[in-house]
Image 1 (tube, rainbow, N blue to C red):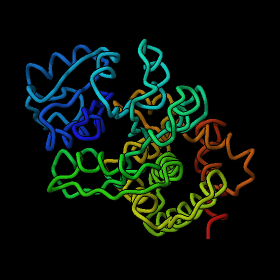
Image 2: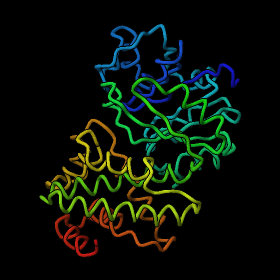
Image 3: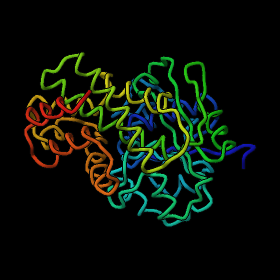
Length: 331
């Protein structure tokens, strides 16, 4: 299998579309599962995803398209999941074939609500996938910049470095560089947490805080991330590496960031429901804030930023008052 593995991407959003684009730079055929029959048929006829990254044109003879998750799973050796974490459980319930011997890479930056687990742990606990067959694809990288073929960096994490290398070799190109890591738990938690901190940055921006405050917020966020990840998975890691600090910065500052956009709307006075209705994409930080807050209640880690975001989103607290108190806790 390692000599000529087959790859399938599961998901129809912007990040899934970007990953398919990267894979088609190196493979003659890529499996692609998306739930939407409309998007699938449009892609076959018009050579682009109608809903996300519509500027990216595909050669459809390179794509093995299906709206049957079982067909995609049966086709591939390496399965790349890019389904929003809020919908992953429902999609996996459609499986009627085993994934026990598949190699699973998560490109999902969220926590599975039904189990409260990061995606790798969810596959390990619920589907008995060995950790050696689980990996993570993380940034710092925005799908929109992949579409524009701007130089971007990925971190590919797995306990099995050979499998990480296989994945990296099939994603690299003139505009994609990959770094390999063995910190699958830490990088995945970092990908979850940075969305919460990006949401906080958006709220602050919506409330009228400037760049000076944002810099202090991000400085405190990386230290909070370090405390949180160290508590849940202690190992030697440099929190200033791209998979942690880099991903936090691009998500916290970029205009492409959906979590920052969502937070900005909250700061400007939108209700959570109205902000969700206004956006066409999932803001993973919304779901992550609840699970991270609940997880932290048992970890006794100091997490004032997570606490503040949770208070605004789930406790119906006034963002202006919450962030005024948060500002006094930052240093």
